Length: 131
Image 1 (cartoon, one colour):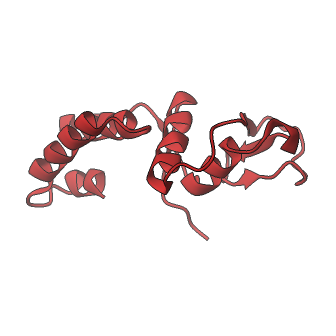
Image 2: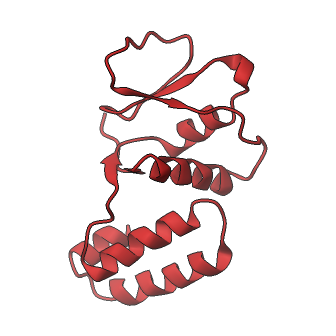
């Protein structure tokens, strides 16, 4: 929301984004550095360098927490969908395997942050999903 507010030069957005970035830097949870970098890019008026993908962070987090014996989950690079191991996917190069084995049971914010960090490592950032 802050990035969108900065894009349209909404009153107070600059100060709110700077304060949020400082809080993220201080907190240091998974995904905070990626969010802070995105805010920094928006504050500087430059692109983040990450491609927007309409991925559901909760679904990516679930796939990251899957056990290796559960099979390999895939991220659809066109639609942002997370495909379970038993869903047909084809092998057309538009799917990215999601590595299993992240610790389960973390608070939701940390789970989503871990998913955000993994996406950023792939050169992606989550964007809005459309039905």
